Image 1 (cartoon, rainbow over the protein chains, first blue to last red):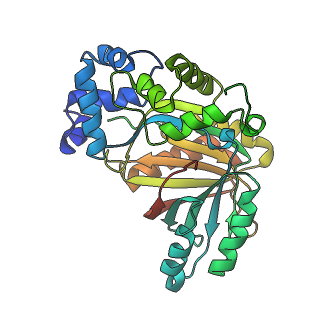
Image 2: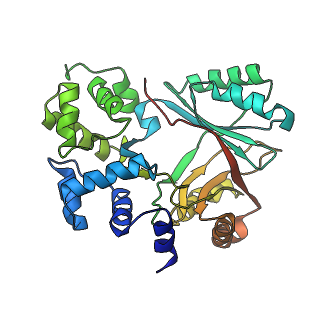
Image 3: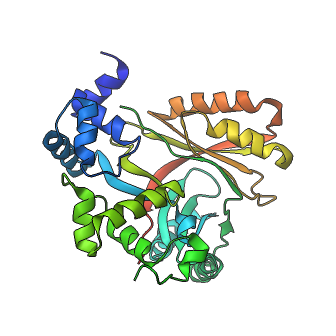
Length: 159
Length: 169
């Protein structure tokens, strides 16, 4: 047994689960019976694939199954921003930042800039206003790091 | 109805019907033998139109792909490092493409520096089963970038403070 399959077994995935997790990260057809088509590729049947997929979602092995959208092409604003927050203020500031519905993700990271969050707004123009508001509410400077160019997005986590 | 274009059309090349399809699929695709039929019923649209629009959105890059998003922590990928690099702006496109092509890099971007605190302009997210594996992969990036690197760092996430993802209203 190799390391990958040992790890998969440890989290309760059998061979078919692994093939499903790996295959469904590569895309899914837009067709009449897409699950049947993918099931045939995997050597199983439509009902089994759907049941397994439901179980993988229920168990939290998969966090989502469906279309993934390109935020900027939907006309919205998107940026990555960071703050250098004093340890004594960290929980307070995390609560204040997280309270903004525009904050999609927020991570604590080991660095002087220790709080990193993604802002997603309905329009690109809203980004600057939300950043000003976060600075006002928290009392900390926000370093805005919007992407200048995207070289690659996408990753397959093989199990 | 689909003849009436939403103002969003110009900005994001999506119209009001596309937007309804997007909102209806943000939570995922129905786990039903005919998921696009179920979606069409819910939206009260012809299934052929729903499928054609999804295909068009995908061809146009509005949909990056249709598929599964694993919870990578649950799959055992517990090392997640944001590697950041200070490389010459003149070379960043060439370098960024090469780093983005590595199989363990999930996101690779050119972002602005904030001097003097933040000299880094190239960001590459690196995933591994633990921090040691991430650092080995970062070493491969350093090797690939060679003399172009003036400075770099790896920021590991110590805690997820919020993760709701993006949502259209």
